[in-house]
Amino acid sequence: MPENSTPHLFRPLAQRGLTFKNRVCVSPMCQYQATDGRMTDWHYDHHVRFAMGGVAVGMVEATGVSADGRITHGCTGLWTDAQIAPMSRVTAAYKRYDAIPAIQLGHAGRKASTQRPWDGAQPLTADEGAWPTMAPSAIPVRDGWPTPKAMDEADIERVKSDFKTAAARALAAGFEVVEIHGAHGYLLHSFLSPLSNRRNDSYGGDLEGRMRFPLEVATIVRAAWPAHLPVWYRVSAQDGVEGGLELAEVIELCRRLKTIGIDLVDCSSGGISGSPSLSTVHPGPGFQVPFADAIRSDADIATMAVGFITDPHQAEAILTEGKADMIAIAREHLADPAWTYHAALALNAPDAHALLPHLYHWYLERRAALTKG
Ligand SMILES: Cc1cc2nc3c(=O)[nH]c(=O)nc-3n(C[C@H](O)[C@H](O)[C@H](O)COP(=O)(O)O)c2cc1C
Image 1 (tube, rainbow, N blue to C red):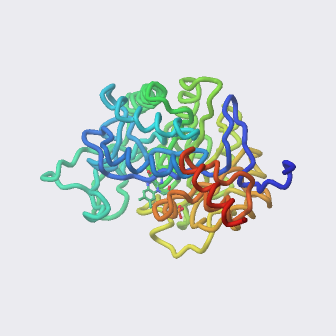
Image 2 (image 1 turned 135 degrees about the vertical axis):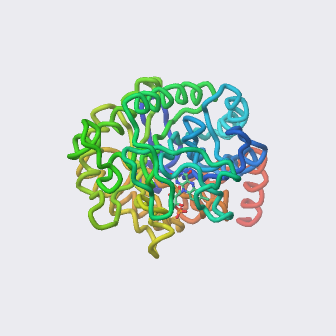
């Protein structure tokens, strides 16, 4: 079949020294099942389902660069070497099935020290092991939440160095793509948003000041990550709250991210004063795709679209219309870990069975031959 009759979703994409075999990425999803930041068997089971289902890239959840940067006690981390080995099992599984392992590194800032979602997602109490939080300014997420410490220069330097060390550990664990978590109201986003950043030093004020810390982190991670491997960045494309961060400001950030060597922007939204848009508004299918589209055209950088993308034809149209370069799928993967394989069948992609592990492939080919006969 000639190249151009292959659906866009199944055309490879080259970035630096890597080639993604198709355009499907498992979007990062916190599992809240880690012990002291270390992955458990659950994480392995969770990811190996996707690895066997044909995805090009499997991304591990928001992983704290420091213990105080975790969202909950159950979040994964990379602040000690002991956290590397359990992650290596996951990266090896993705590689066994010809998929690329990615990890999202982050610091939860003023949204750290909270309960797991099913326990209420409220700030932890002292009895539950709460820890102090920090942010650009001493402004709580909302009324009733703890007031974070306004970060001083030493805090800023420490977090930058934590990102650098965590990136080195991610590499040692076998990851090939690192994504910086700059969305959902966590630390980097809270520096960018005028609602949470009221600093009057060089890390606040106008957009230039508010971008400074996220750009410094991105520069440090880019330098720590090998030149032949990509670095991605997840943005909240807008706050969606009056007086909050606007898309035009995020586009400017993305232009700057491109100049420092960031390879793709993963386009989410919301979360500055609570849950991301997903939980606070009633989004329709592909509700964040316009952000991926605008950032791709105005900042001239590769984008990944995410949010309520469930149907293969919907995903194909996003790529065909030039609105994004990759498609991230979170919840639909929970229901169907072989979403990529099923999408290949639905779109008549050549060699769909080859997306499944070899042994399955053989049986399915034989069944297909019988059906034809
Ligand atoms: C259980 C769960 C955990 C999530 N954890 C993260 C995370 O660690 N980092 C992140 O940036 N987004 C996280 N998200 C958001 C998803 O990556 C994704 O952007 C969102 O669910 C929209 O995509 P979907 O409609 O395909 O689910 C999470 C979503 C879910 C459902």
